[in-house]
Amino acid sequence: MKKLLSIITIFVAIRSNAQTNSDSTQTLILPKVKWTHNVQTGINLTQSSFSDNWKGGGINSISYGGFLNVLSKNQGIKWSINSDLQLQLGFLDNGKQTTKNADRIFYDLKAGRKIAKNWDLFVSSNFQTQFQEGYLYGKAKDGKDSLVSLFMAPAYLTSSIGLEYKPVTYFWARFGVGTLRQTFVLNDALSANKAYGLENAGDKIRNQAVLQAILNYDRDVMKNINLKFRSATNWDYIRFDKPGSIVQRFDLNLTMKVNKYINTNIQAVLLYDYDQDKDWQRSQVLSLGILYNWTR
Image 1 (cartoon, rainbow, N blue to C red):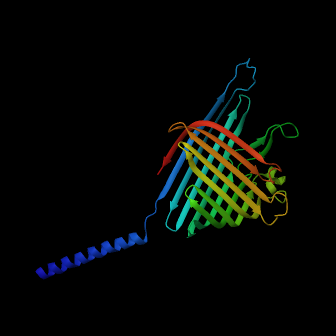
Image 2 (spheres, rainbow, N blue to C red):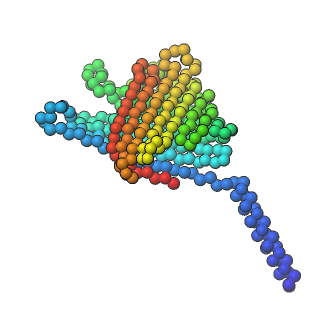
Image 3 (cartoon, rainbow, N blue to C red):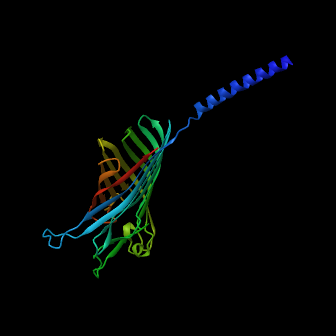
């Protein structure tokens, strides 16, 4: 009986030690990599009013809007995944007419594998469109408003593979050597007019093989002041010798925190897309709002 108990004791000890070593080995081989998430959401509000005898001129107006930014990262030893969602919608109301002053749907998903110091091989997909209709006011032949855009007209889906350079945490540059840029115009009236570079009347999709270069900078340049800058260039090398072969967009976002929840935000966009307009397009929005930031 004593021999049996001794054998059982030795067996249990050996099994427990083996289990401990197995768990330790498994932990070393498959380290857990957690997602990190940063969520920003808020509302912006601007109001202007004038008395009837205000000689400086002006129209009573109020602008309002909301936004949601969700940035998620999974950083491993060799592999990394980034998910970036940006939603924004805003309006201006002067008592007679309500118009948009901000409208954006943006999503960027990228997976990368480290191949050298500061260099990754990446694959990515980027989608952009808007929520609501866009008009040129009073620009139609009859003097009425002219519809120029709406949800999925246009929409851009860009799929790319290439190299990414990341020398520091707040800056990266992507060079997409194999990139497909697809333009969607899912509106009969706009597609019939070959809007946004459609090759034939009635087409819904346009495919382009392009070279892509993206620069991204995101850093707190001073206490409570954050600067975001993004430059995106797409070069259509199939028609490189024709007008509009290069599409460029520059986004600048400067956020200044008054306190934990109140912030002032400046957004500026500079865009050149020959298929939309032969000249540079620009927009700028200055807003004061409430910001909620959550990080995990």
